[in-house]
Image (cartoon, rainbow, N blue to C red; front, side, top):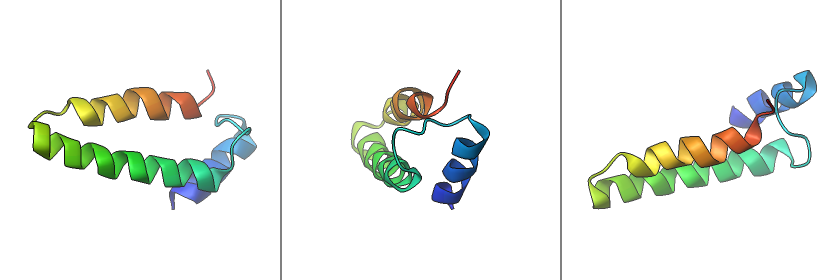
Length: 62
């Protein structure tokens, strides 16, 4: 599902095209799952905020 949405964004020019939609979707899922685990261990929402800020902001063009 994320792969399809990223592909649409690439076609519309809103998502970077120097990486494949599949690789970005995989990284997004892996980062989110890792952040969820860290959130539980650290008892903080900061890992989730960091994933959103650092990973997702990097995907989309200004």
